[in-house]
Length: 375
Image 1 (cartoon, rainbow, N blue to C red):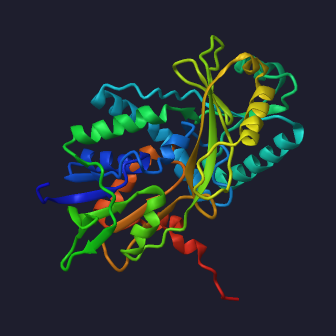
Image 2: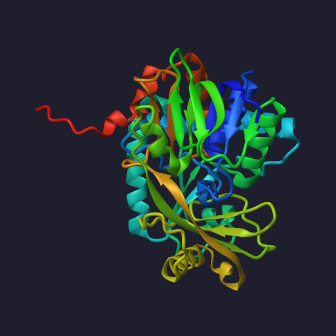
């Protein structure tokens, strides 16, 4: 490959990295998107496709606000991306329901939402408790024994694989350079400024600014530029049914219907390291909970199931970092790559161009995990 120097290089071709690459291209920068290939641990495979606000941000008000901003920006973001690429993302912003199967589960969730509402203050935190016949009107087929659900008008859903395809195509249409089959293992800061990126001794690209968004591969890469990235894998398992004539107009926390008519069932989280194998007990638990919510699902055949390894941080919130030792190097990790895609492509890209993460967003830095010995 001819040696080339880019304004920005993004390491990681998943949802997170592709969102950044698309955003930089949209801003008119020369961009390289460096992708390991299909042998990479694709966290997007475990993404349920929710653009979700409700329930997010307990313990960090800024994350609740950040999720809401991105969800509100998603309409324009989706429209621009679809127009550019001529791809339908399967995006629907109709609001969403968080289903609670029993009263104890419902009351616990309501207490959390009330806490988030109190934290939001004058900004507000919209949700509505829906039960009984009213819930059945919105969610036909809901089980009679379901305690209730909360509705948030800002929630929605999208096909994450359609989104990934559109981001990468949009990136190319903006003149981006896609470099596949390149597993970066060495980052060499240059004397004046910028970075040289290599894979197994082969130079892949050089750049003025660097964004590390390589999922589980980010930890070792970040260390090379003085960035600590505290993440670990969390396994999630997903089930897809055959197509159904039943219609579910709203996404939920455990079930959503695709445009093709299949149902996706999920909501599992296991700490099993890098094991990506499905387990019978977890799949049975997913089916049990989802069939309790919607009994008609019992008549559908399961077409596929799989497990994937999501990104998780110690407190569940994103980690946004910049190198103090090597200015121009940034690293971003999160498990909400779909919800936050709009702000990543628009707002965060501007931070990188400006050369620093704004003070208001330093709360997402890894320093929050440092143990203080102060009294």
